[in-house]
Image 1: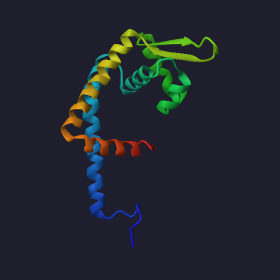
Image 2: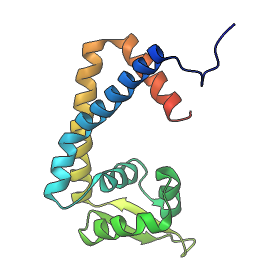
Image 3: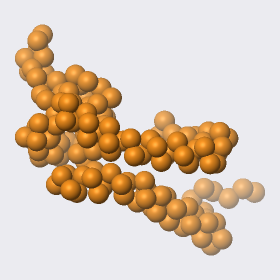
Length: 149
């Protein structure tokens, strides 16, 4: 008779704790380079996420960015205002619907985003080259499951 998923024995619990720790330390290492750059500019990870998704979706409406990030309008307000004041993001009114605010990276914003995400892309590229395509495929499958996709 198979055990239920939530019925975890002590050996499996220890294995899962090890996986949780790896996840924690891997994420900390993965974000450490960009975090140093952000800190020097008085910014945080939330700013990187905004820059990243605006950069991948030029002209995205504020409401679309809120949906992607899974945050409230209030949570987005302060970091977005800071990026606008620093002229890293530009906000324009949509020509057809003046209520819609569209976001784009400025030249400075695109340069910063490229520096931040470039560190992470190079890191991932080196890691995937080291572990091979099968491990990369397995990693992607796990990350998709974690992300609920």
